Image 1 (cartoon, rainbow, N blue to C red):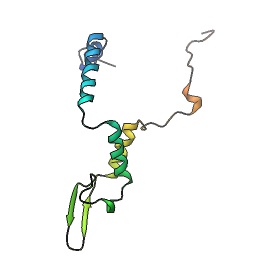
Image 2 (image 1 turned 120 degrees about the horizontal axis):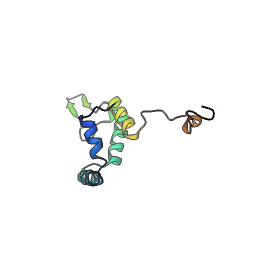
Image 3 (image 1 turned 135 degrees about the horizontal axis):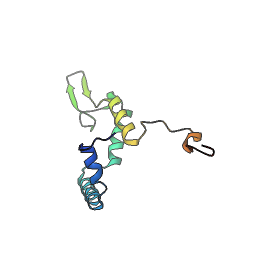
Image 4 (image 1 turned 90 degrees about the vertical axis):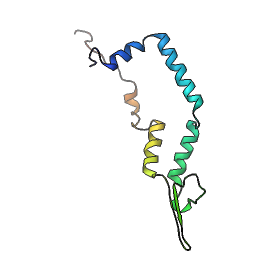
Length: 115
């Protein structure tokens, strides 16, 4: 329940104003246009993190966060694969499992005939 005077209530009320709603959409559009990386490139990067073996990450790789080389050994650090999976799931909207077919269209009748 939204209590009067809270930020959520005020925000909800303001979003009913078409001028405010249009201005917010305009600002979001401008912000998206200024973004240096688009959604597809981000999804590609996260996929690369998940699918690339740590032993394949060389010093010049975009996945390399840290690199150490000695005469006989080299070591590289790359982004966390599990975190990349979490972000990919979130970006793709896979957090919730899909509903079975029989639950997608459900009618709820309250106080039907004879009620």
